[in-house]
Image (cartoon, rainbow, N blue to C red; front, top):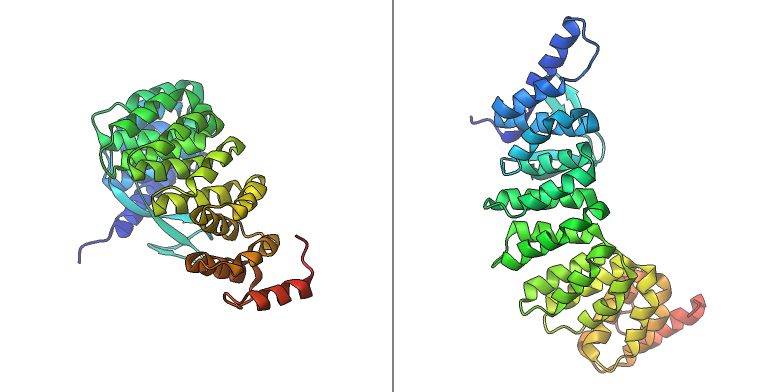
Length: 333
């Protein structure tokens, strides 16, 4: 039977563990291989060994500075693995890895792991220009993972905004490098807002969707008015993305969203209700109940869904029942 990638990863782990044992046998005090040994594995080891060596180098932080050229050289490596992301730590028993209840596995690749490692090792002032230059690589995998690295750096990657926008502008489809560029702009935060706002009027709905999502990721209050405008975009997925983005910004956007419940535009009103539902604030129920008197079936459906999620009650679109419930609970408006 052909071994799975997880099995091969365990084999790679075993090899690196053997290096640790050898170090101890020779009287060394380190429990992990040295950066030099790990660099050698990245350069000449198997795919599984390279992946694990890159991860360990990232864990070393600034102590692995000598690995920067090697890590940059593997940004284009898309060899994929399924790895443990969060939850309880897997327990090793001999050659087997036992996954506790509640654990999560995600797919990643060696280049993405290298991008994270670079962000943990290098000073942002030195690394950002290098990753920004990598965004012009002819290799889309390098561009994608360079953007992931900039996302990991976050607010200190402001000087790469122009190059990230160039990646987006050059995209002509559902490209992973473009998605990563949007993610990075969202993580950079406030400095990206103006550039993202300009993309909200792009002719391609896909660009508007991603720009809307990225604005939510910035958490900026300057994005609120623009996201409110997107609640009535011609594309349903843009409208849904705007509702989610406003919910992501949360409390600072609450009153602005509530104000849209009085809008003349029924579409904007419906997606404002969706945003309030996603915010999860029960006090919004008192603002939503009056909308159950509407003759708009789609609005009624969204109101019922929001009220049920926010209150835990199930009165559907029955205005009288919701009003009775509201009065009994004496919720403040």
